[in-house]
Amino acid sequence: MLEHGKISAVQMGLMMYSSIVTTAILYLPAAIYDYAGRDLWLSPIVSAILGCIPVCVVYELHRLYPGDSIIQYSCSIVGKIGGKLIGAIILLLILFISNQALWQYGEFVSGYFLPHTPQVVLLGTMAFASALAVYGGVEVMGRLSDLLTPVLLFMFLIIIILLLQDVQVKYMFPILGNGVLPVLKGAYFSNLWFCEPLFITFFLPFLKEPQKGRKWGGYFRIVIVSNSGQYEFSFPFSVGKCNRKR
Image (cartoon, rainbow, N blue to C red; front, side, top):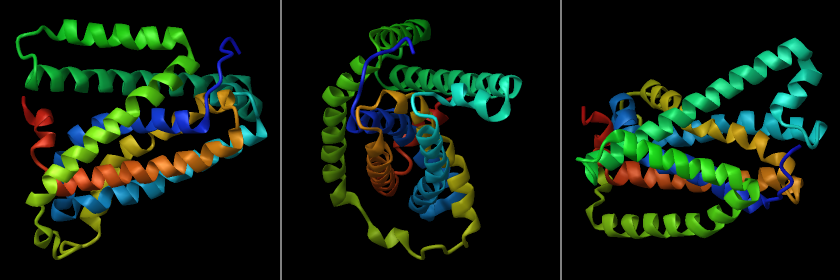
């Protein structure tokens, strides 16, 4: 491995948390509402449970092939050609998710804060900042997550507290009034976010204590569900408007 830095299981969990929740709270509420209606808060719970399956599989594979990423041990499992094909698919998936997250960032910032700034400037500066973080290595990204994610959590907590006065619990009922199918449709859509922890496979080889990776990953999945559910219950339309702007 070219990278020699090490991170803790907590840092890995913080990185996974921030990578998911920062875009999920912007786009998931309004999108899931189209499928699940008032039961939209149930969909992230279903997605989180389903998303645990690939994470557990990846963790067990890491235990069998310590020190290797999914691209490396795929060659050992399915052969050189099959492993290279799987690696290419995973890299394309990462590229797609990264481009999607970058576009979502640009849409949100240009739509709410800098409407007259060219998209190329917004996207270019974020891509440059991301490139610097990657160049610094996994340990730098882990320390940045230690520094910035607690601030993000504190901001979420403040917003949720301020919104509690407007929460109308009566609008939750009847629960499953339209059956289970709408919730499952919403869960299918939100699973696009909740399967992203699959990419912990690239961080597991750099953990100081690999045996704690799955435990802390599970803790932060619970936090993600809590944040998503609270935001979707509190304001399911306003946050997601940025994906309906155009």
